[in-house]
Image 1 (cartoon, rainbow, N blue to C red):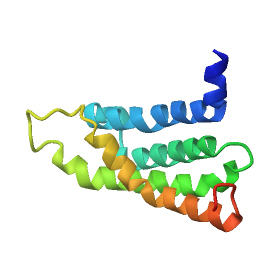
Image 2: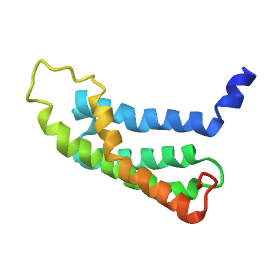
Image 3: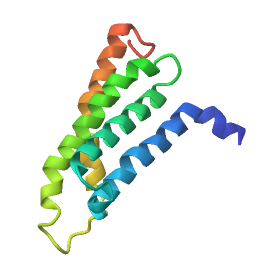
Image 4: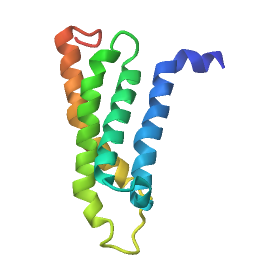
Length: 133
């Protein structure tokens, strides 16, 4: 158990849990049970994705860098939700026999989140973070 604590910090584990709950679960719910979102489903998906990714970014960043990671996390969440909604969602109903549980939905969200990841990297470099060469 102590080896687990040395290799994996609490912030990282909390970031994984927050990302799964506030990014993974809303994507799966939007694909399979869109009626759960009610009226203005796309707007709610944007807000949940942006806030969840922002919180996960701040937890992944760790202590001392959480505030720095909030805005890139927000950019990542909005980018991921936008790419997901407007690239894949219209095509969901086209192939009726296709598996909607594939990893493709999460990969598209991740690709949409890359501008936020890049923004965080740039901010870390400008601030003089410890990972800068």
